[in-house]
Length: 369
Image (cartoon, rainbow, N blue to C red; front, top):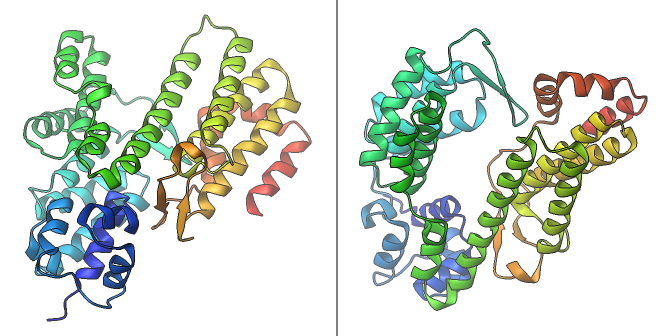
């Protein structure tokens, strides 16, 4: 049997989003050694194997590739489907088959629950809209099934992502029903910001990797903060449009200061959202020149993000993130046509106003360039 341990290490490293250099620091080897393993030139020695397995939370047998390859292939198939399909109605039967095949896989169970929860929702270009406006959101059989699955996952899963996301959906569900005490119970069971997984991972890391993981945590904080500020500004009807524009523009400036050099990595997606919000607000204020300037910036960040995939190692901008090097692999690029369709779906009046401007055709042509 041919050992494929290098492929397995590379796969696990991609999942954890850790560079060869950072992994080398954790297990006490050189980054060149890991590069050789992943290229199939040599293998880790017997003393190093347990360290790698422990770090990635897998068995040595799994690391050596003794796990049933057919299972690996099937899980990869289902993972690709989740990433490719945006129609939840189409995704549900696929995920039902997946959970029936792998009933103990918490990630697949969560994805099925999520698809059931959103089965009446359509997603285009990252924009979310109601597909069936007559469907009762909280009482459909699919929603009831999803809530039951989220509850089971919250109790039993050891996967921090699955647990956190299940909690988020349950909190939103209870809030929608006005059951605030039930939502608060779940909130109290979750760690605080300073005790989150990302900070804990930095504290648990060897000295050589401490700054890498701490800087990764800072990036997560920044993107979460940006999302929260957007939501609180856009969700307050008593705030004037000029105030919302001012605060969002200040947030854009802060992000540019933190990611100096314009190297935002995954945060290009957050910048895209900020510029989209600003464009929409400027249309509402009647300033079409500013609206189109922000549309141009939105398109720039989408194209820049898409170009990062399969382009090799990428170092984020800024002295603040000098230890963070990442790779963008796979294909979760934003479809530009879907992005525009999503804007039409969620902001029909705003897009209609933009289309009446002679600059619209020129801007649309930039999508295909």
